[in-house]
Length: 490
Image (cartoon, rainbow, N blue to C red; front, side):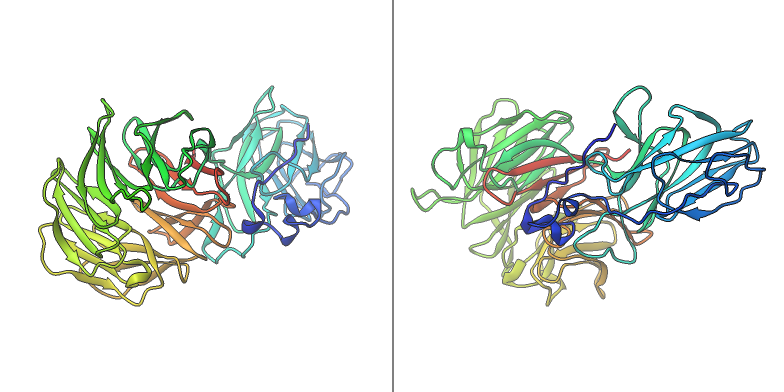
């Protein structure tokens, strides 16, 4: 059965070849073509004759309908011109066996290369066979030297048209090497993100607890209030896609932080009617809404067990106050537009955006502000671990780190227009709103970057809570096309 691959990308974000906007149908697929020629077998006999033993290999054409090779108990290898390879180890079969191969350039959604139909379908082996699956997807920009797609080998489950990723996935820039014990349909593909909320107006801020994902957006078209500045705080139970509004319409809700009892958010205010910007919270159990402070233009919020910390984009200040409200106290002035905050036990960290092009820290107890980095190109997302501060630049597409204690910055990744940032263990996650419009996982130990998803319509924010998956918000290229996505790799 042939299933068609559809890669849904806006023209403004074309992550494939230029043909994907107004070009040929071929350019809209995440699979490439290739030349054809003569087949090759473990014995040099493409007609299915006796191999004569040995793990010999040959190269020939793209496998087409009726292409086959023979292998016996000593094993063998088949290699095609497109890089597709079957390696049958000694002892995998006990007698002469004919394996058929057919290439299909159309494959299920998420494929990054052609599908191969291996037969006889359902044939099992005593030892796993190794398959090399070529990656033929064309990205807007060539992957960097240490960057690969988060691709797996997907195979059809026995007796069904459902495909699942195989355990082994040794990925390079050109191929996925995987193993299977059963012949079936197989292709290289990406784990697809699961929509948790769709058709929202520009969703942005995210937070999560053990049960729910929370996000701020302008709502869906059926709950539009007529005021384009209005929005809502939503929650959706993890593993589902039923979003519930927790608050009445609110002016331009943005940054979120949650603790065990409440969801805190920055209310952006409104000029018509005049509604001041505020720091707000809603009780998770009763949905009672409280205003904790009205001040400036609140653009960010974070907290710990005893206090809240938030940024004022008008006054360019960082404030702190008790969890239950009280008089805000200035922690730092001249902070730029502090729309992104991070914290550890002792310090608060933020980026000043284009207003200052600096990265900062200040002790939660107050004191002198330290500039971690300056002369940045519109720094945005920020994260911190025990040793380093990490930040993402919108202007030059760089993801950098610098020691908390002070020192030179180091480039981790070069994208196009980096936005959100999150860290979990030794993995740093980022979003790129330009180029391939990707969500990325940077292994800080190996310095390898894996593109988890590409073609995302304006991925603004990303979070990666301990023990859970990765979540991000796609603003969408147009109103009411935004989405909140969940990604879980095997």
